[in-house]
Length: 279
Image (cartoon, rainbow, N blue to C red; front, side, top):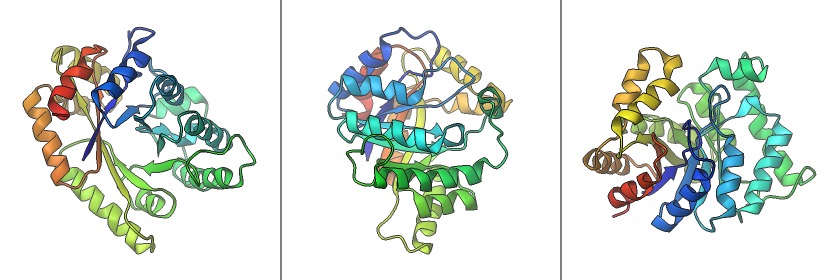
């Protein structure tokens, strides 16, 4: 199983040059990918802009969105942005797309959240068309466009994944939760007659240097969930032992790439995680 690390692009009060320095150190440490989150109504950098900054000072590490809220974007313009980033990075982009759980993001973007599932399905198909015909924006380096990941475990989400995406991305939780969702994704893939199997990605949060700060961040970031934010904060991986055990459990569950997202903006977290996850 490959292990990636998130960029601190959605952590408030970060230094202006932290994202690029973090990306440079993460590649040097040997992480396989850099992940970013998408949030409109929060002190967070735009995800594709963040990855573009990271792409400029790295050469090999993969760039992945975990995930972009697809229905907040025009399909043609998002396809152009993604193709541009894929081309500028030498074909290193993996584009994860989802619906987003926060209705306030839709409110601030002045986009109706109703019908967003259907819009995401249409968006995935249209983006593929744009990448293949090459009429809008640059041609991506990756034939047919960047790999697409889709999250969610509902029937429509799984059908969307099986028909239009390249893989599944899991939003967090214990390995047994990932294993159950991944099994459903593989069944849906087979039922539509796709050859091979879907890519299987997942994410989790970690914070080794300052657990209290990490907990505070998660409680704030997920305040919209009410009391469920406490559960998310409890799942933050705060010790080397918990991280090692978590990685082992996800590997045993069949995860192919696990991206660990930071909960503090301390750049030394890159080295702390590398010492546990990449040894």
